[in-house]
Length: 90
Image (tube, rainbow, N blue to C red):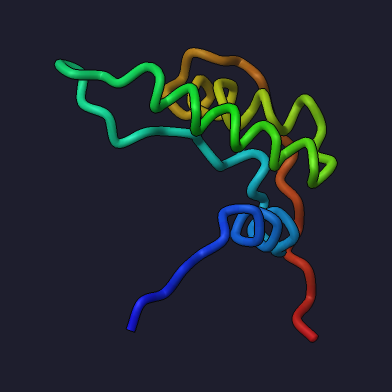
């Protein structure tokens, strides 16, 4: 059985989840260094930015996904984030 997934729907559900996604999501591709496909990566970045705009995500959230979260993860950013408490289950 084939399962088709709509990227917009998945990202919308992810950002509406109770997880602190905006501070922990990192964009990446499956391209290899030796034959990195710049156009393919740019296409995904463009699609995701369009989806983020449709979802009304802030510039800070978008910048986090595409750069700042990775910088913080590898220790080259001094930016501190405030952890959000978990939402109660219903």
